[in-house]
Length: 120
Image (tube, rainbow, N blue to C red; front, top):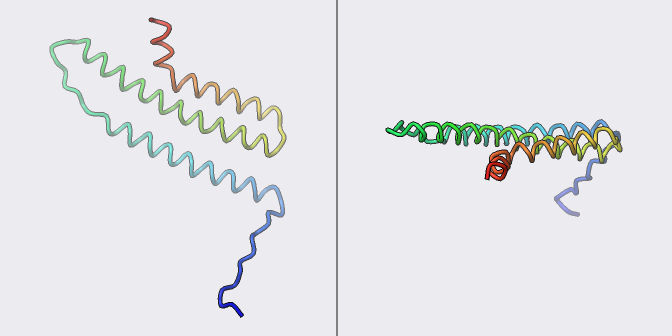
């Protein structure tokens, strides 16, 4: 006889259990992304204003685009969660919303690079 009992895996009896787990996973993901964005936001070095006013504007632009990138990454994560939940529930309208959120997150995340390509 073994002293260790084998633990049975818990079967998900209803869809609410799976939905609850997905929501909990998203909450953990959102908290991790938000903490990471806050850590990146607080780690931005403070640049002293030199004699060139364009340096100040460039530093402010870098900071603002960093914040925009953090919002884009959060939207990317939310879009991935929406697509995953729509695949689980077979909901085509939620799937299209998920892909639109995903595409918007990509555009917002790479906004600076897109603007640099447009301007030249």
